[in-house]
Image (tube, rainbow, N blue to C red; front, side, top):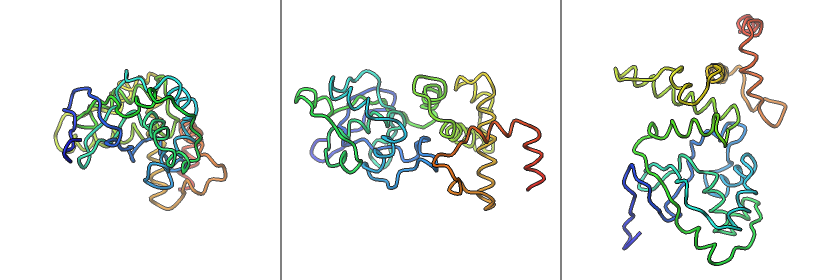
Length: 244
């Protein structure tokens, strides 16, 4: 930022930007109804990611070695700023290390950093996409079958949102992807994504019709895998049809 003018990197290129320009993605699939931040501020988001995505090891690694700009964060422009579509966990670790007040509000302890290492937290490498479509292949594979896999509920939300967007393209007469094609792009070879998306639609329908809400669960976490596994059995689906 110079003379009050915000410089955004061009789309399709990797470039370092100030951390102050980066926002968390409030639509992050990790933020399922049982793992939603209590607010939209940085400390609320960081606190939830610390609980659901285990930031402690990442924070320790960055504090020891500094932030290494090898893999860019995937970002998109929103309201003149950059929302991080991929890399929210890394952004959370950096923001916690940069601001003791934010870390304290998120109930995270951060180690001291050498001045030279702290300087690496000022600018992060990002790759800007024009649309979320451009980022989906990378994000889907990385978090479905890749090294940083999401839980089942987050995977289902990601795939279902993608499918909903493809349905809108279909309705507008545009080229679109089927669920089978989406699953293939996400590296799924066992029809797991199909079962997850079907279960999410069942759950959404139950909530819309006020039959069931996730907040009614007795356990702290929602065992979404039990739902999509159960729906693959004929006895289970028949019981639901009779009960409905």
